[in-house]
Length: 321
Ligand code: ASP
Image (cartoon, rainbow, N blue to C red):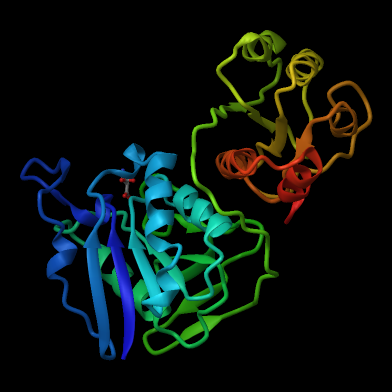
């Protein structure tokens, strides 16, 4: 019989709606009473946190990492329940640090446990089905909701309230769940992972916009409180002239600047050769992170800096697709 470690962290999947409809955190996780229609499986359940996912910080991610880094010695798979708001970040952090071959599956819910059409138990059961599936190993961290399987590296929350909120704009879902089958559509190339022991680096994410004031970036350059910065740049990774001057000030102050696209889909890459264009940003020392949004690039830079990677290794890690 397969042995699965279940870590509950909280989120809507663990919450309930009060009489006035307001969704609240309860003392007891309703998932602890869950009954499933599953083949025999041995579940080891731990309520590691019971918090909304907006309260999740890299410290919580590190706690999960430490609990899971040797999980393959005792378990055949792992399921983590989590709030959906930052689920993509925790899943990405674990994907870039754990490197386990056993399935690690994260899930959540958009409707709390006692709401009409609650999706929590169903998603939890789907996640367990994926975690015990014979084809699920060696796929990195997966995110399972609404009958779809997504790779942590591509998934993002796309809708504030709809149950069909998770999507992988670049790659499409990695698989699907039917009543009787788990189907994987493709295998992903293996990517780099790095262990992690601390998460103290300060890395803000800034979104670019038409007319972005470079002075906002200069303020960061003068501050001693940041270790790097992510800029969600325009299109394929471009900035206005004033913002480009601000980036130069950051780089002159030895603050790593990572460029991603603010576009919802596609990859940031240097294409344009003028002040603020991607080619000039890269020439001046900014690093392009491919295939990740700002919040994921932030975690990649955090993991890279915590590991003391050389400039070259950091660039390779951020460039990796
Ligand atoms: N606010 C909730 C959370 O992330 C949303 C959810 O779980 O769907 O904890």
